[in-house]
Image (spheres, rainbow, N blue to C red):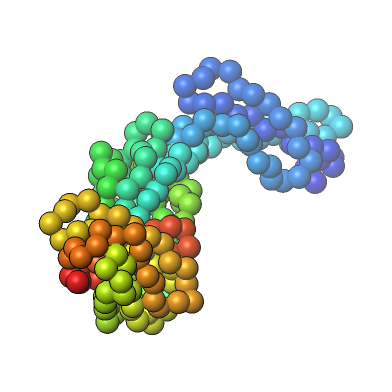
Length: 240
């Protein structure tokens, strides 16, 4: 309650620092959310109380920055047994000074900051046989964006991969997994560079590859695949 009577509403005025004219909204609570602002922009805000006498004096102007736009299309992939490559599309906001990558497994969260021109980062010395959650954030001079959509993967390589011939044109592949994951099997003739792949659902640790060229030597490798389709590191290649 003001000295001049009970407050009936508040008038909030705001504008971009680049604009000349304030916009005005009236609210009855002592807080409000202003929407449809420009990302990564400086805004000026002032408030006045209104009662039956009229509108009082406005407060001093308060400056606040909106958040920049978060990076999009974040992708992750294993490129060694303990390292991950993260890529993203850059923020559409101007004045970005860098990107912050956060990666978490269990109670351990680590971050790495890269410069504003980067759209790729490598995370090294990860824990083996661990599930990592990875998110990326735009950083500007004044504020950080919301986090990107989360991506996850498991740093695990299938163990004891074995390959044996079943028929002249088929191979049986077996492996051991400590976690229940889908896997991807890649195979090619030893002298070829044309890898082919087959996905195998979780719950099985054997798979038969059919339709091969009879009596040819083949190279086979196996990797885990996350629920979002991210392929982990492949085991060492097995020739048969």
